[in-house]
Image 1 (cartoon, rainbow, N blue to C red):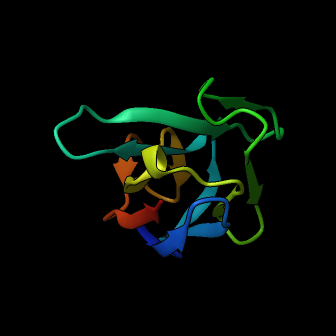
Image 2 (cartoon, rainbow, N blue to C red):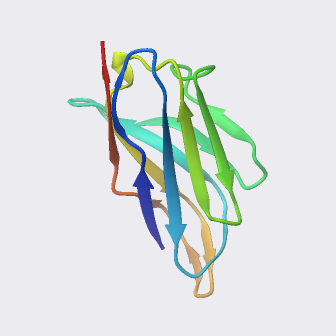
Length: 120
């Protein structure tokens, strides 16, 4: 299983970006898909997750501004980020936990990260 993230970039405060992350491989299904971020000098933190039924979970710092969604047919997870703030600047990583493949289950795959920079 491989994850390919895209959509990062430079945006002014108050702007929007949409991140995408596509999982590839011999995938039957994915349990939870999510986004994490790591700012310079800080630990990686949860941004949002979504399970296979569409139930989502958000960090308090992004509630009301970010929306996570997924397309199960495309094995893709999205993160719509609105009202961006300078403190949202970070490398954003996508993650999948339990993936059912033709070879069995695989666990904890990470994408390569995509940089989001919000200028003030």
